[in-house]
Image 1: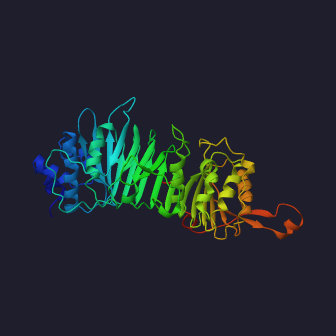
Image 2 (image 1 turned 30 degrees about the horizontal axis):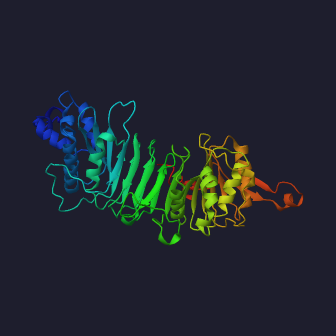
Image 3 (image 1 turned 120 degrees about the horizontal axis):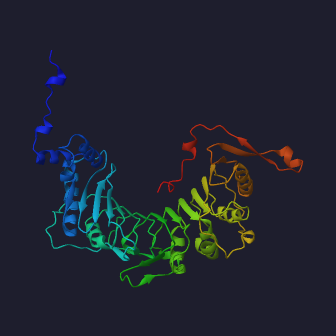
Length: 443
């Protein structure tokens, strides 16, 4: 009988470096890096396989070649990718997720004050280099752009123009980014813009897009829509020609107005675009300062809305007059999420106790209310009881500790003239299925 330990042969280590590097190139990125732990010889082989360097133009070609190879040879299970150094400390990390989304992470080294720039996406751009054959257009449908800087804007614009059937675009953490201009890609249905601290405006060619989902987190930017000329903006506040008819909107403006105030005409168009959403994230101050004065643009209200994430900066009673008023506009609501964030911007222009919406809407379909950020159980109970003004059913109240309770009206207590509601703990199986985290909370 052969001794396996004595007779096994390490065939791979006997290969020359170029063949090993080729093998490593087929590994998921994280697994490729882990091969550096095998031995001293393997320590830098992953870099030879997956770390490249060159000019910005060559980096674009490398990404396009990578996508062609990936589409032909790989079936993703983990993240595949490579690292590209394009000079002066500028680095690009390229990765493809298991779901086929391309992630481009840019790093410009240490910058005390990033140079401000604009990002224009959609016009065809090419470098003076031979590009890979694109006779069969890339099938890429999801693109994530992270930490784009002034140095990498041309690279990003060129790459974007090669993805004609892109359906989802995410732009995140781009310090120095002042404006985004989108045109020329009619397939995009989902636009996400997160944590771009200097962003002032988003300009969209509305004839070229059919957005159904818009996610935004940061200071309020100026939203502008144009037809053919990007200098001519569409500002008609009529309902017969809206730029978009969104089904899903996240307006996380808890950082407050933009550096140059709020473009009211642009927000009116945004307001009309979200009138038919089914899922919505909204800050209390946005309702008070921007929506309440323009309620006439909403017609019957948010009549399709089923899931609402409401963000407020205070748990005081008067603050929830705004929420109660808003809920009267949402007759189909099934799940309500309330988050108290004391760092959220607050309005100073509205007397909260004076807010009145005359509708007598009752929430017949409300199944659950999830509370987060409240100081204690007593505050949660006070809010839950205050919301009974619009409850028709008796929804589950899910507290910060994950315990579900139900407010039950006790007729005997009502007759005796005391508080008719009791907060009764309710054991619920599959609570996370009944009321999972709001879809925008994970962004």
